[in-house]
Image 1 (cartoon, one colour):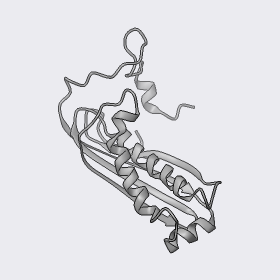
Image 2 (spheres, rainbow, N blue to C red):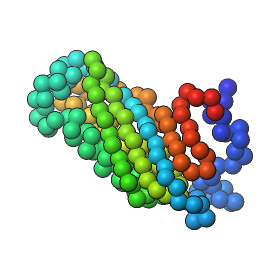
Image 3 (spheres, helix red, strand yellow):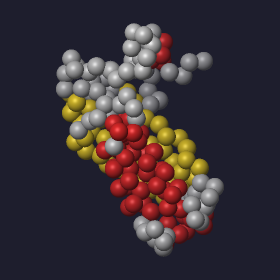
Image 4 (cartoon, rainbow, N blue to C red):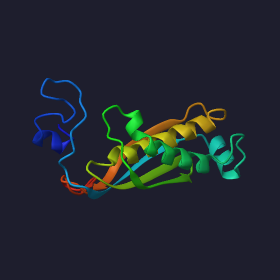
Amino acid sequence: MNNHPKEDQASHLTHLNEHGHASMVDVSDKPITARGAIAQGRVQISQQLADRINANDLAKGNLIDVARLAGIMGAKKTGELIPLCHPLGLDSVSVEIELKGTTMHIQAQAKCSGRTGIEMEALTAVSIAALTIVDMGKAIDKAMVIEGIELIEKWGGRSGHFKAGASQ
């Protein structure tokens, strides 16, 4: 079963040129529009690490504050990290992290005015925040699991509005 409805509509991958080689998509003819995206993910941690985060007594500092900042910094570097991703001038990036039981919930929102989508920046923010949680907590919990990193909403541009779970 195809879980990606857009695949049925598109007969080619946009990052391949007419010769089948990887190439950056030419967006120079697209209009500049307001765009935004929201992504989320989780990190499963041990109760021992959760207790230490709640007590804010990790040797590396406040895990949530550092992971939030790392996520913002990661979003700003997306065009450098992903080979065919356009570098974007971000207007806003926010990263929210909440510890619920033994799950770190991460949500990032990115916005810009540009010619191409900003989904990768929101996804990168979540990914880098999750990796920072693992880095800061690994001395206490080596069995952490990053999971569920996904785009949950995007808007702007010619493909319009997308919301995960909504009928496409």
